[in-house]
Length: 387
Image (cartoon, rainbow, N blue to C red; front, side, top):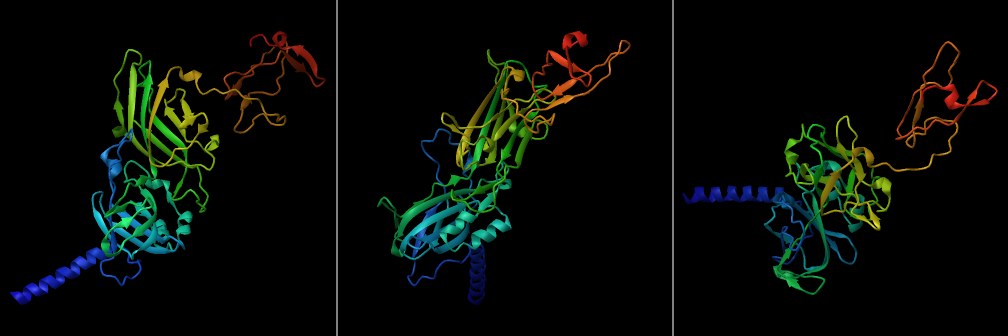
């Protein structure tokens, strides 16, 4: 029985070793000091925040611990753990001074994983961005945190932080790399028959790890659509009031963060559109501040978006000058004027109808027109009997 038990223990040790090594990448430096490590605990709830979110916003399943030499920026450790929010990780590392980067819930996407595994210097972080596909309500939110100038003490005694406080466990406060949006829509009339859903467009296709990102260009090609028919779990009916007979809530939409180089660049703002079917679709450009204007949707933010639908046909009309392009009826993307006929023949025995369509709210007919090739002017109202 002793011999069998010893064999069983050996197999058990091998099994645990296999499980342990499958949870991390052994890329740290070898240590000659027994028990040199730093203890790290996962995310703790943020205190004092206006919107603490919901439990789904705090989930952690994986954690990558990167340590860089404070002086050279060279990678010292790069370990990947399977971990949860309350776990304590004993991270092996020599005593010394480091800048730490923690990446939680990194995308299960091999091209990104390959780049992360290959990091050799702090500057390599500037080349890496997460695809927007990994920022959605159905997935765990990727998170990140940097803690610089950490002095790891020998013998697992903890670490001294930049403010000279010493901690036995390095407690993380990871920041989400995505944005949570909760929407409330209100209207004076019941819009249930017309309301189809909402849409976010002009979203970035990548979320960089750092503010000094220099990787592939970021494109604003991502569109997120939520419809009552296909995404009913997002929508709940609100409570009507004396002022607003209709209220619809859209809960916990997770989007990729939008951090443009210029927060005042309107073309890089995220567009929000209310889908009213065949009716006019109200829309706006999302901004977190109006004066000075700020079109960013920063990482680790929860946004409460309230839309009041008053007169749908009277909103979002912005006057602007015509561009001086004489050779083209259609000015692409600016103003469009379509006319059914450029020339018609009118005699005493026939009439003609000319119709106009435009993306502008008004089309104006000039008071004079020209008759024949000679350019003879005539009053429009005397030639056309119904305008």
